[in-house]
Length: 68
Image 1 (cartoon, one colour):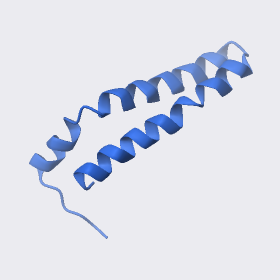
Image 2: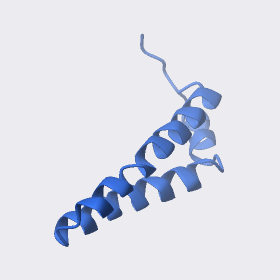
Image 3: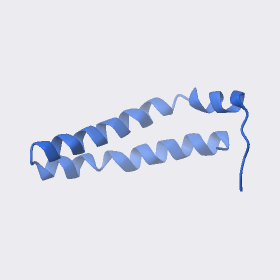
Image 4: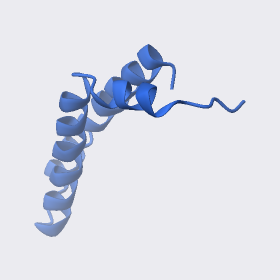
């Protein structure tokens, strides 16, 4: 199923306020994983993995609200 989105609808989805915490959670998770791997700290890397499901859920909520 292919949905054609107009540029106006796409901009509306990108202006959602839930994208800010989603991006922050994604960056915190990825940054923590990289930091943990670089420092050979498996606990930090595994702990940072807990941020990724939150980011995915927030991105999913935005996508569902805007029909993406």
